[in-house]
Length: 104
Image (tube, rainbow, N blue to C red; front, side, top):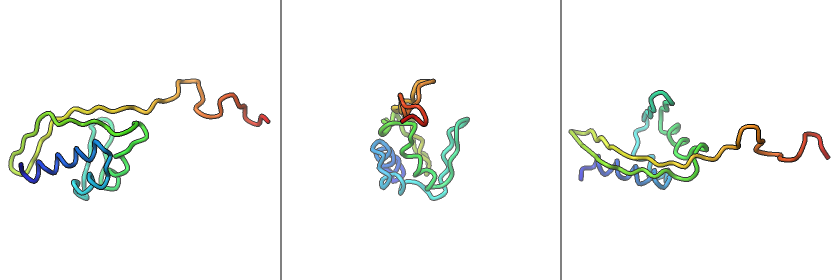
C-alpha cells in the first residue's frame, strides 16, 4: 500500500470516529472542500469546524468501495451514511412549551 492510499484510509477511519487529531494531519493547510451546489470550505480551520456539524447526530459511516491510485493521485469511491439531527415540526416551538411570554 502506498503512503497516499494509507493517508486516505487513515483519514476515513478518523472521520468515522470524528477524531479531529487523526483527520487534520491528513489535510493540507490550504484544503478546499467543495460539495457542488451546496457549499465550499477553504482551509484546515474551516474544515475542522465542519467535522462535527449540528445538522447531524454522531459520526458518519463512510465505507470505501473502491480506490484507484495513479502517480500521486488517489481516487476513492465511497458510500456515506449520516443521521440528521431531528428538527421540531413546523409550528411547534422547540423551547418554552406551555409557557407564554411574561406568564408567572
